[in-house]
Amino acid sequence: MRKLWVGALAIAGVVAALFVIAELRQGKGAMPLPGTALRELGVRRGVLPGTAVRAVEMRNNRAYRQLIAQQFSVLTPENEMKWGVVEPERGTFQFDDGDYIVEQAEKAGQIVRGHTLIFEAQLPGWVATLDRGELAKATKAHISRVVGHWAGRVAVWDVVNEPITDAGGLKRTPFHEKLGPGHIATAFRVARRADPKAKLHINEIGAEAIGPKSDRLYEVVRDLRARGVPIDGVGFQVHANLAGLPPTFVDNLRRFAALGVEIAITEADVALKLPPSAADLRAQARVYRDIVRSCRAVKACRYLTVWGFTDGRSWISETQPGSGAATLLDAQLRPKPAFDAFQRALSR
Ligand code: XIL
Image 1 (cartoon, rainbow, N blue to C red):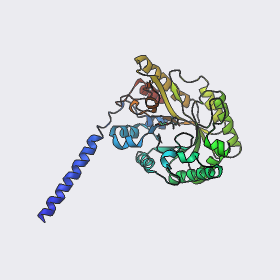
Image 2: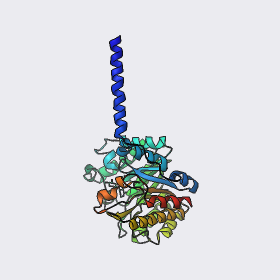
Image 3: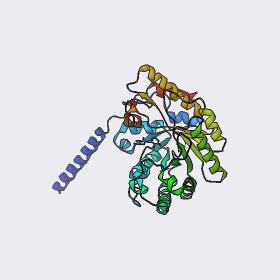
Image 4: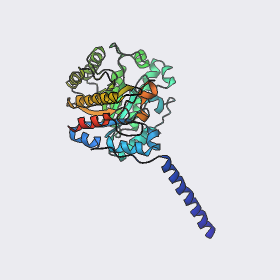
């Protein structure tokens, strides 16, 4: 009997020690950010502030996880719901990291923006090898399965991502090449069937200014609406830099809103040349301020998501050599002038 007790205590001790080690490895809790949380300000303004998040970081970094819960209302998995992650082999689905993000969001009373169903980047190799008929089948199966898996739990989907070229054509993706331009309408219809309650958006990069790219996007959305295709919103990514926002941005958002769709800013960041000067950081703050003001100037603009909130975890420095420091907080999770400007613009 005694031996059993000693054994049980020893096991309990080891388990407790493992917990302590795991906690220590997660680092300290977050330093609180000054002022009213962005998500609280957002509720008052009718704009939901969001951020792209990474499952691995949320799992392993307590301060990162805490700040997400405190500050934001909408989470977009940065990569965890992309085709290459969720269906690496045909018919084999991996939902773990996406599930984890959805669970965390639910715990914190946040909604999830699903990103993304039809996108030529980060596709698994097998997709491009399919012929027309098989690609049509695989695409429908992918959308039904993924949207169905998170039905009722992902509030908004980026159904189609970045379909337009800068020159204003439809991109020659495998989907467009093999299925034709009708694949866009089909994707929306299949998504709607899989979750009738989710809002369905088209999302585009570099379409902030009125010009060939946004004109084509506008035509696509107008045409889909006119044909009764279930599209609810348009996302503007707003990957910006110190050149600032184009002067036509707000007018551009307004003409889309006039089509009856909701507007989202989906991936805002403001890239700087490394290392940034103090003046660069101040100029960056003004661009973030303008992003918030632009959204607030348009009633239909309801979502304002940044593509990562800390310079320690941002795709800019990871994919664009010489650029970085693009987010609201520095790599130590301390507020930059950009955070203050974003918060003020949301308060006023
Ligand atoms: C990026 C991610 O942030 C990176 O981690 C990944 O390596 C590449 O993709 N437009 C989009 C996003 O819609 O999916 C992209 O995300 C950034 C540009």
